Image (tube, rainbow, N blue to C red; front, side):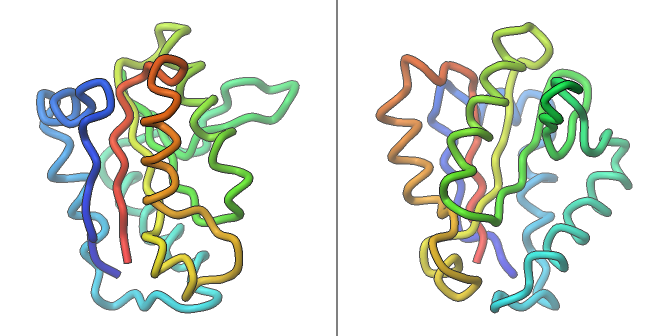
Length: 154
């Protein structure tokens, strides 16, 4: 696995992550050549990312609503992180969860890590991909106002 690119223009997300000294650290997580992008690799990717987050003091699986069982992948101070390697239909929910945390004043910025379109095709069918996420947050930039950094890996 390697970092393919980031999209940091959404409401100055890159600046928010840079100002906390977290952007380079976050993107470095996705430089893991031992992890191969292929069918069935999702658990390995998730385990790797969660271990890196834990080692840096992030809280994992943070509940945003216990009744509904809604969680984000990780939270630290005033930033949230979401990893999505599943079906494309899950991505809008992830964006809404991050927006909810932002509007509730619980975070100041967020990031979502997703495979590129090419990597998603290697991993499975109809999986979320960075190119589509970027198009959607650009389209809904007045609705999704949280600064969200998109981290694309392949």
